[in-house]
Image 1 (cartoon, one colour):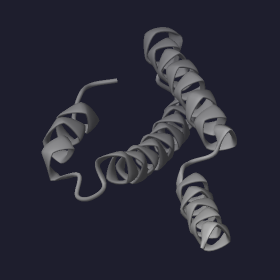
Image 2 (tube, helix red, strand yellow):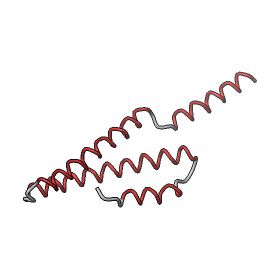
Image 3 (cartoon, helix red, strand yellow):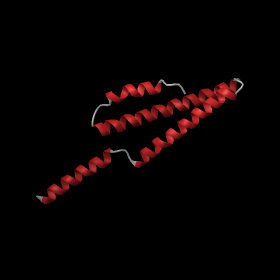
Length: 105
């Protein structure tokens, strides 16, 4: 009986550990934040100092696309993490996330 209880407890703990994001996930999320900050700085620099030539505008569009992709990946990570943490839906958090995605660079 004790062996069965110990095995059940171990199975529950293993499932809990496997369902959580790993430390590597958090490291990638942090590095994504750093990259987004640097891309925002580059976008502001291009807008401020570029002569608005074709190549400068193209570079700015590429930076905006990269920023959008990183923000999208960050939202997916946050959604997954909040779903896990809350044990269900993330409806209460989605209104604040949509407000942040519409903020200016």
